[in-house]
Image 1 (cartoon, rainbow, N blue to C red):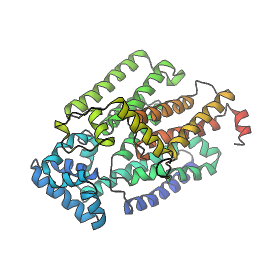
Image 2: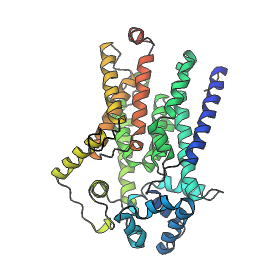
Image 3: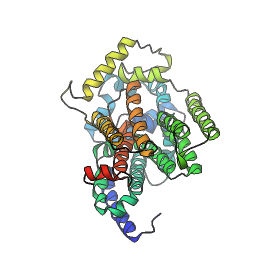
Image 4: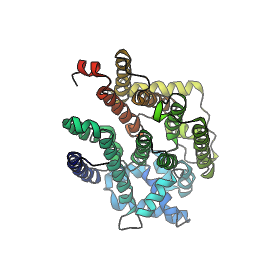
Length: 388
């Protein structure tokens, strides 16, 4: 993969800068409340006594966090107070989290080394960040060989807000994004055997990756051209297996399902979700969706999160320019642009979370597709107009 000495040197410099970034990430983590549940799940692997686990989980956090941050985790709202006081309520919410069992077992095995559980969580995010960013470099290896200066904007992209926020988070978001990104890279490299394995791992870290995976599989069957086309047998088998893995994970871990997760996330946190029947009306859904759109655009609290509209608008402009300049529809990056944009919009529509870390894979694939279309050698006319 690295036969060119120039590329080897550039990658070494690139990776060295990523290591520097990693020290910043390790020293400045963003400790989300969900870390409580991941620590609990790791401890539950060996010890089924929920009273002891409950106590040890909060002890871990108290030793790691300063008092102010610990108090936020423990009692920032009534829900967190209830979970802190009631070990049974804590145990009852576990199916929201134990479904990510590859992530949980990765933490568990790392914690058997010299790392603590919390540092193991950070190590997984940092490792995922390094792999994610390295893949980004290799996606543009040919372009870097021709335009060395491309090295710098790629590095800046690895330090951009969506990626760094996910890398600093004590959640599986960076891990899940890395696996999905790696899967797309292997598809582009036509490494069928490897992308099958990564596909499965991706679902076992974040089940909602199924949306992008299934749409891309459909594209490869229905619209894939030449080396990217898969036959009906491959499409059918992997579509069925993907759905089966998704259903099996949810069933095996007694996952509460979409409606309880939605209710718990956007209407009211539920201390005892197993005994709660979540009912959401269309009016409630539309009200929540309207509120989230307002927050997204900065119309509610004057703090706009610009990445959603920015990337969607960017994707649409790129697609329009590509069609205007007769970029062929068999260009896989045109389709990756459309698939990522569709998945981003669809995922937000069914689960309107405005935190960037949930969507970084789609942001980056959109941006990569834009650059790949612009650098496409068949599009000399467009490149001249953009002065690339």
